[in-house]
Image 1 (spheres, rainbow, N blue to C red):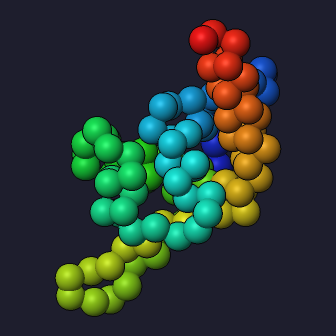
Image 2: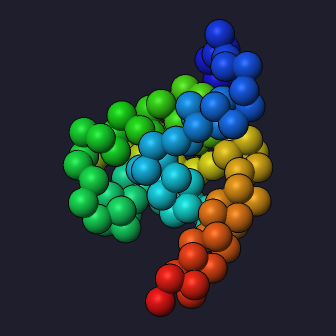
Length: 108
């Protein structure tokens, strides 16, 4: 994990800096149950481009949220999983899910 310098004074801003992108939150959601290959993530996310998904995964890996494991096979097999730090975001994702479900119920 790279050391992040100049973190914002606001903790909410720090969290948003790390997971504030739509795709990052959905990647976290999809990796919560366990390890996935790149193709599985791309398929489950739907409209994300390969370029964007790669960039998001690299950023999350650099920030210590995601593990990337490359198997020395032909063709290479790459698997992604959450680190302990990434898993520690589960309560945040659960809260987002609960809030979204409550919003949908109230707005109908």
